[in-house]
Length: 210
Image (cartoon, rainbow, N blue to C red; front, side, top):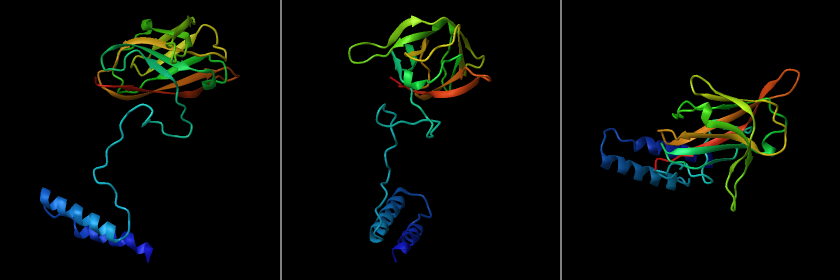
């Protein structure tokens, strides 16, 4: 008999559906639907549930939502829209298992900020913590280019980046005009008979309106 309870709820919902607009009719329908659900012995769904907030560490939204996703560490000196900020996009030892011949960072279409190669450098990084700040400890000689459409940053180190230690890209820019969440993906070309690009992970960056 328990398998017929959802059917009774569906019929109750159909009977309570308003035929014409109106706040009073909509409220009565909602109350009738809730009563029908409770009568059927099914836990009611919350009405008007709050949407997920983009608070770091509490709720995380990402475009590439799959088991192969790897969250990368980053640090910004400012996360407020249109403010000038230094970006530190880090690759820690656990994020890369081989040397890197070329590093490509893809940029989402809605990241509406100007990117200039002259404001970027490849570094050996110091990851910050409670007593120290994230920073660039040593510049790694490299050629850095930005795709004409602004959707990718390509980094060509003069010599392959060996494994071990934390490296990353530091760049200075004015934050996007649009606040929100932005997923930047790291792809690395690794040594081999036929060099291929592999996915290293993603920096999920949040820019707030104020």
